[in-house]
Length: 347
Ligand code: KG4
Ligand code: ZN
Image (cartoon, rainbow, N blue to C red; front, side, top):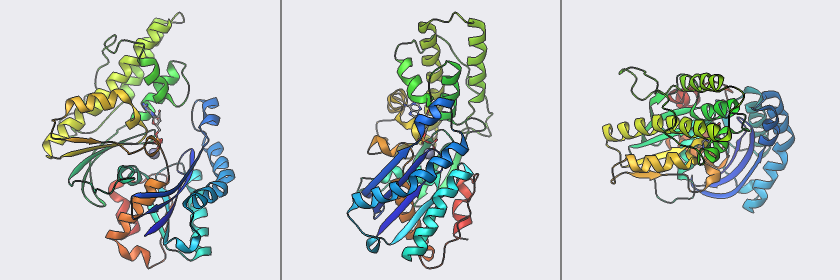
């Protein structure tokens, strides 16, 4: 089965053709990140205008790369939630038009499910269920137990800032560019990760796998206020390095605890933050050697892309084949918990 997928939930306009949930036949991404770097973050109206400009060329590029025509496509998939509402609308309207014109079923896909299925791309081997998946990006940090295809148990989520958002906000405080994750990771290499011990958020035993990063951001702000104007490059590097350590340790600790409790043999990491080298290094060190850490096959599958949406859609319709038969309902929602994703589209 070949699925043509679209993703426009944030600042990447993306289209892809994916066969049988794993084989990427065409993959095109146009990012408006450089524009957002000028404002230090994504301005929704600016992102939506860029999507509107780029969606048609990106669709054309992905299809051309696949060497296929619309007659070879079995279904259209699109991210319908969560994300920036005006950005989502561009992708959903384009997908609806494609589905109507080419008479294809339309499959709505939850963005976080897409990040989970990014780890299936390029691989013939399936997940080993149950698998533990951490998706950590600019908009979400979720720790999910994947019990089977499209059978998610959300073990923990962020109570305030997402992990990538914490990187972005701390980078902003330090006067580094957007996106903050790569900027902090680079500067951190020059600093001492033990220079500052930032306290981990205490969330209580009832929520052992939840995250909270807003306290860390405030601690960095207070430290910078104390240091004042004359901050040296070395001091900045120490703060970047110590802040990265605090975020990474919070993620690694929860993953290691959950991996042990749920006796998984695979830990998948996905979303923009999974590109962080320090995180990868510390996670591998914290897990038993019997557990495999699975990363997206290519770096471009870590960040937002449409191939992951095509993969997630394939496994969704394997489980709910009736989604291929009836006209899909596409509720566009800027907020939607992963645990409710299936209920809303395949009630
Ligand atoms: O998944 P993604 O491309 O888009 C969202 O859905 O948000 O993730 C982008 C986020 C940004 O917050 C960015 O700062 C973070 O991922 N990120 C990183 C790294 N590369 C990207 N965070 C830490 N280390 C990195 N190397
Ligand atoms: Zn994302």
